[in-house]
Image (cartoon, rainbow, N blue to C red; front, side, top):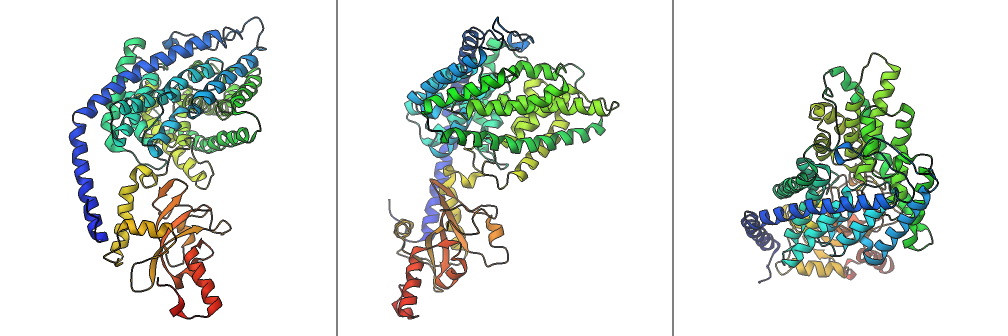
Amino acid sequence: MNTPKSIESFLIQSKNGYQNLKQKWYTLSSTKLVFYSVLIGVVGGLAAQFFSECVHLATKYLITGIAGYSPPGLPREGGNLVESFGKYGRWLIPVVTTLGGLVSGWLVYTFAPEAEGHGTDAAVKAYHQHGGRIRGRVPLVKTFASAITIGSGGAAGREGPTAQITAGVGSVVAGWLGLDDRTRRLMVLAGIAAGLSAIFRSPLGTAIFAIEILYTDMEFEARMLVYTVIAAVVAYAVNGAFMGWEPIFTLSEGTSFHDPIHLLWYSVLGIIAGVMGAVLPSVFYYTRDFFQKLTMPKKLKPALGGLLLGLMAMALPQVLGGGYGWMQMAIEGKLAIGMLAILSVAKIVALSFTISSGGSGGVFAPTLFSGTMLGAFVATAANTLFPYTHLSVAAFAVVGMAAFFAGAARVPIATLLMVSEMTGGYKLMVPTMLAVVLSYMIQSWLTRNAKYPTLYQAQVRNRSQSPVHHTEYLNTALSIVKGSKIKLSDNLTPINMKDLLRVGMPVTIDDNGRSVYLGTVRKASHHVGKSLKEIFQGKGHLLIMSILRKENFLIPDGETVLEPWDRLVVVISRSEYDTYRDLIRIPYLESMRYSDLRNGPDESKAAPG
């Protein structure tokens, strides 16, 4: 292939290559990709059944078999809304939760450390950073480690492990078939949709969830939607053959929205859910940081988390497991107002003990649990304080379920649809829309400068921040430079530019002394932690082409917040550098400045650029 002679020819070749790739992609999508999506859907439905059976057996022999504790179960899954204890009461609960953490920790850290934590986050990370690659052993390790964690009473859900299991299977199958990274990433997203669809019986919501969970802003991988829909529908059908077609939660026939005045109370619920959604990621990840700092073997940390959970569960056994039965009881108005308030917060702590310590399980179900308790609490409190309000506890429980997770995970559209499908609460769509949007907006605003803004740490803000789209946005950055009437030397290729910047040399681009440099954000700069919009307000704008942050490539915009040691590819002149020296250190210009101070302002001694 000939090297382009100018930036213009480079852009033309890039555009033509992209169009050819795009055409091949659409041709392929009409045949093989549909088949792959169906295949992943079948695998997802079967994997969900297998994993659910593993959880059932682990529960039978661990928390029920050893501790004698049986939590309420969902009637539509063959359970009943009855809690029972064995002859030793609650005393053996900490023993079982500790044992579960010990076995789970040994499995994970011996065979597949990437199987720790909540599985959906790991799948999202694989999509953005690893070309969709997930090691073949991960699905198997995740299955047994998560089943033991949940079956021993760990405050975790089934959805995250199932998503990672099916995404992992999709990645492995793509490897066997010798597929490219783009198709592999598609199969990972199809796997997420399939696994969640089978667990929650929510084909449309989970299909959208798989393409929305990747970003914290309102962005989607829309091109993948056709295939996530196919996978989700097939998985739903496979699961239905085993489990039936009814939603997993039961709502009474009269549960609906019928009074516009009640929207005020749904707004209150949305605001509170947004505040709690901002608190949850910090509690979760600061607890993780605490466990990571402990000087003890990693394999033992989930056992410590299990012990803390077990001690907590001696007072509040409701926090054990996924808690689906307790959620159904809250929907039916069978829990007291005080218990609702306590459980909405306690489950967050229990989740953090279980997963942040290194345990294996999902965060979706525990978050829905807290949201359900919160919604039921708001309705019960309003009815108590204002007897003529007549709010439906069931309706508020369902809306709270959606609003809390939508804010904490930044997935408002998918959550709105998923909760409607999980509960059959389609008549609650309007208040759910209001509460979900309010929660999302409040949570986003409160966490705009937070260290941990969202429950899924592997999410990136938008498409420009994802390594998957680096080439696309690098072309955009080069187009911006070209559009700024910057003239590049005809013998300077993009490859030369990269090599020159790597060794610290400037790349001269016009006759006004402006060059492209690679610099580093100063750790002590008072601009660290501020957005570019704040930094350059009232100043001339420094042209920042891109930001290199650890292994990530970012295209900056006004909302981008600078961090210490960020490497910036900037366009600047030597005279302009003095204005921004407190922000960025450019070694080449620093050396030139030192030379000027030592030898005097003799421009002939300075290197060009």
